[in-house]
Image 1: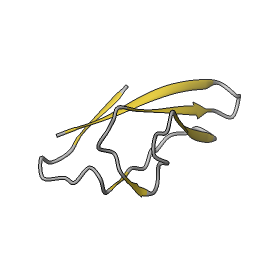
Image 2 (image 1 turned 45 degrees about the vertical axis):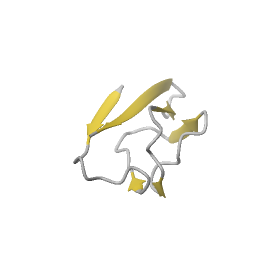
Image 3 (image 1 turned 180 degrees about the vertical axis):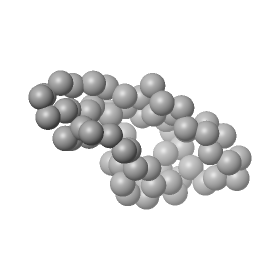
Image 4 (image 1 turned 90 degrees about the vertical axis):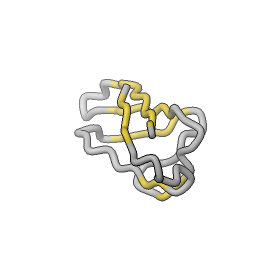
Length: 66
């Protein structure tokens, strides 16, 4: 789980998140916004499946907190 603190004035409907990780693929789960694009992140938490080169899979939960 990753908790990301953002300033209280941040408009969570217009956020662009980028995940710096060695994963080969990062896949949104259950309607989570795609990372790397400006999207609505106001209804989290959001889950993402990370798949590494050796095909190990992990699920990360991202929470934006004001």
